[in-house]
Image (cartoon, rainbow, N blue to C red; front, side, top):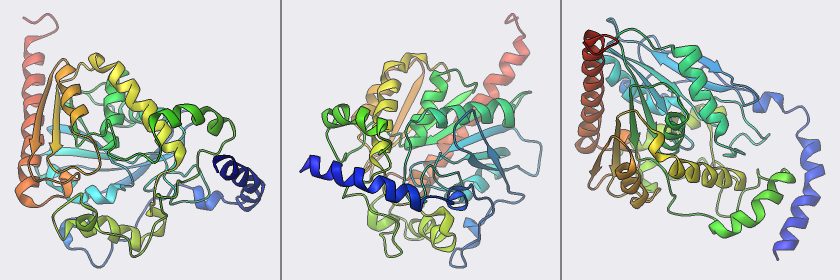
Length: 358
């Protein structure tokens, strides 16, 4: 049966290659989006929001956005989105952080949101490796954000964005603090076993068949479940935000993951575990008590293994803490603000002490 499926896939490759000719528009990055009329004003773009693109090496073009507070910024926040999310999903949180006096940047992952796609099927969540994501983080910090002065940089990574943020910290991306929100180190469900991926991933990559979805991974659907129905949140209004942006903006639509994506995730999570002691930045890990997406045990294990990590788990919370009901989201946001203020104070003390700690 497996050989038959592989044979069918190979037979389709020439057809798919021909149909993909002239697909540049489909793959191209996408900037401005249309605000869904169904959303309340708190989900609108923050005041002065602006879009941009970052491109690192041979990786795909990735979209980012930025907004600043009305006063001189006290800190800089870089948010890395989770699977399938566009920056628009984080607008409410960005506005909240702007009101705290922080400049907020949001970098979308490769192949999702307004970023360039790797396949002609725009809603396929595909990546051959997480390394381009990590390279884009480094390029954002060093070439676009360029942190300096007395405003510290705090990186917030949600879900798989948390994995990318951790890898970036391990590989020397400069940051004053790291927040991991429901970080994805192990998924609760894989389409195949780890052993299966280890066996067929090399051939799959050599044949460039990583874009294939497994039968349990579907394309974007207009009638798909919202955030409450799927389980990441218990908030009825916030649970409809991501679907509303995708309905109003076809270029933002995302469906299920490809086989290549899963293989890349397993590679990245394995690398994160091996190099966990390389994270020097103070880290705050915020976990969901009722997470159906990622496993809880690796979160606690990795936080305990880090040099400086504090973990908080919110009982009754779904995976998307930034989209949860106020009873969860308010303390989650307050924890991020307090952590950032602590980084502001620490940087001020270090500057007063001078280069020799005097």
